[in-house]
Length: 509
Image (cartoon, rainbow, N blue to C red):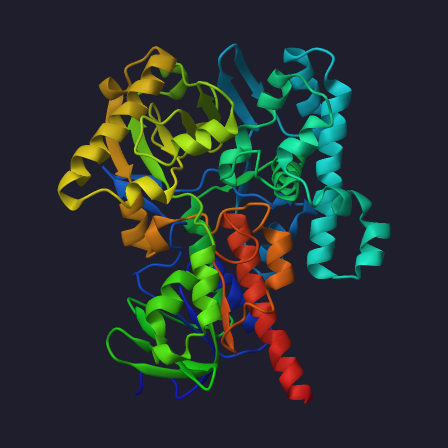
């Protein structure tokens, strides 16, 4: 019996959230889909692992665009529509902000969030709420326009706020609200999840982030992020998708400007009408297209012109006491010596010491995630790839342990507890870990940086021109919607929609 069929409608490279989302959407429309995943499990970075008999979350801090059962947002609704049943837990807070002169925990809900900022910076409630409501209006416009594109004239009438703010940075729009610096600082911590300082972060991106996380709250799966990928894979197979693990794709086969299949590392040549790639365009266009002569010069210029966003460095610890006994009192802590986002972005270009940390104690979101009497605590920085590309193999261990110790020491001083005295298990994840495990280009988990020249609006305008090879689509963090696990689901769906639309157009000819 042959391992593969003679032909598929679509081959999906990568069984992480984006690839599985593509597969689910295509299978739902009756398409014959093959997913090829280089690891022995689905999920990519959406995974967990076991140390000392304890399951540990590898990456997910919070999932956006889920919503409550009676008010699902787009990602949560997609899971429901596809029959992917996940036990979601709502995270109890937005974040605890810790910077000089400020220690405050803020909670989701636009009015509550504005009120809590007003308690720290009196007299700012109305301005903060107006800003958050503006974010929510832009968020609604982005969601509608992503499904129902319209002319510029209609857009101006129906989506005035979106149009008027689209050409401005977060800093420029925020300045129009005449807020004290401390209030601006309290509105800034989530910047790290989109990876650009406010002086170049498009307000559109900031709006989507704040409206989603602050307006609706965030969620985590009861059984860790791997629950998402496992249930997506199980559902996809039940819908007829063929998923094969330990099958690395080395080449995407192209003839006369059109993709027609792939070749795996073990030499299997598999044919399909379409290919969806989770591999970064950087890797695809420089080493995966066969023959290389089929790579258009425009494709190489495109990847060379885009700036990679952030990678990740995390220290994940299982500690031998409940969180409160160690003075850990919040689910999410953003801590810095300043809230100058541009200064932090520059700091993230090197190898530390890092000055902006994000910390998660999963037990406050999922009380049963570790054995009784213990807790899970992680300290993460999201550095740019620049510095980590310079680390030599012979220096790797020294750099890794130096950075990890800095993060642990910083938070130990903050809590007044030496965390090292309480470690049962510790895992250090570096950009090299990410690169090795996910094959993400330079370990970049957040795709291409959001800047005024290159973000979702600009990408939507250039998307058609950037489909350089026919019947080849891209999903993953590097695609149109950008970074994060929620956007990866959206990117996977978008790639599938492109395939379905092209199929319909070509069938109509």
